Length: 347
Image (tube, rainbow, N blue to C red):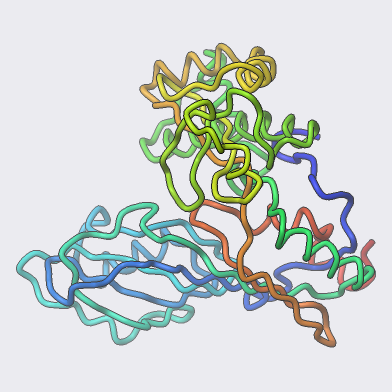
């Protein structure tokens, strides 16, 4: 297995199913946790989109409002092949609300409200998922047992395959660029995408090793820990009850997103990370040279509100994940996803 196909932590899949046979089989709704003021220079727009990616919606909003693309912001990228509820903000200083009453097919305006600040990346606190698993093949009792384990233990917080581009191309291009054997990105937006992809690949490599050692949700000596629901970090040695807090799910172990500086682990944790990342020294040096600041990400992903409904044409799963987490990492601990053109005869 590779960083793009990392090992599961809870055992082999208990079944298989088709995901996204129809866009409505994959539903995502942002949970913002922001009280909108009702006044200000920014118009926040909540919409439901089907068959549109986030960037295309942002361009449509800009054209409709007569704004440059940079005046439209959003919190996170959402899939095209899905039904998603998502917020955008439009910067309209001294201007009235634009007319958005007749959006194109696949876009439905749900709410518009003014606010004093723009919507920044990562503002939403969570995403709620509703997934339909069609052409299910497997043991439903085993599925229920695995779901119960996930409720109590969570799953490894891997970056999903979509982070790396088609067939992992973005990570491969970043690796060649930073190693000096490939071209630099020609567009500024691509630079960020490539850098994110290679850092995510390195994180997945370290997390995969912790999965092999069964310590992805347990503390190692020298760990850097992160409180649940927080971006803060602290050293394991600074908290006398750190082990108990990790076991209780109050804080989580972390693994590095490499770059310059940042908080480093020590002892056994540092030894594990150094061994896995030793072959990547050139890439990590390249990240530092590009001005990328090192940070860390939790290795454990809590899955809240996990519910399962039996339906005639396949199970339906509902759950909520913090922003930046991937539904596909949850599914990887449950099922093998078949392509939709395999239908019910796939295996």
